[in-house]
Length: 297
Image (cartoon, rainbow, N blue to C red; front, top):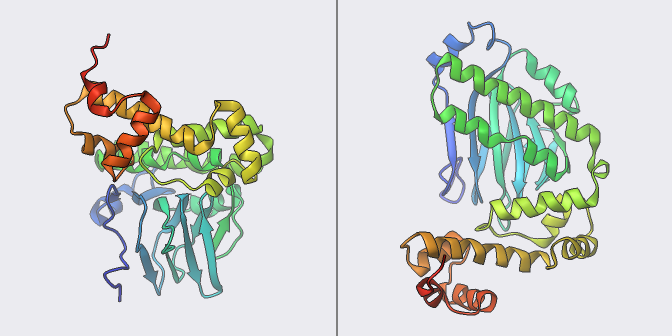
């Protein structure tokens, strides 16, 4: 029984697409889809309370990419923790459960799929032959390069055979990139490149909460080394860099929209508009309302 605090879906900002069974059955007759077909895909941000238990498993394979935060999965052989930078493979027709950590719930991209290619891809990527397996710290590049968002966004456009073929090609590309990332390992990329990847991640996810230890882990570095290299590359400590990126985005919204200060604060990651105003004044030199009145251009 899933309690009110434990749910399979229903998270703010989530994406969830399920291909209807009649469409799947028809698609599996197509020569380009019968060996690999996506059946479900989605994205659950900051999925507090996320919990799924399947005592008899499910007929599809499941790949979970942990983008941020922490979670876990369980099989008859035991529990394993999952953290940002991990990939989880859950084999079809095997009992399992998984969910988000309470204090630091994960953000995940995920995809269910079926077909004879699945086992080949599992070996290609490097997952052990087991009902469920984990690859830790594929590297920030590896997780980002999977581009799972392209898969669920493509499915959201429709279920026609051409669209399903396009989406399946995206899955093959994601699986190939995962295999490449595993083989390269974290040390193959320079520290500078890994810092740049983290910078882009921060820019693309300004409103999210970020932990310094997770950012450092995504770069494959210790926290002190990460902070030193980050400051050398950007001129700022990681959190100060994030604040400045948020304020820069807020300036753009103040210039181009009529949204309230509180609404803009929320968009860039500040629940407290007063604290947002303090940060804004420190960076820009004036409060948001005064900035908005400045004649620009």
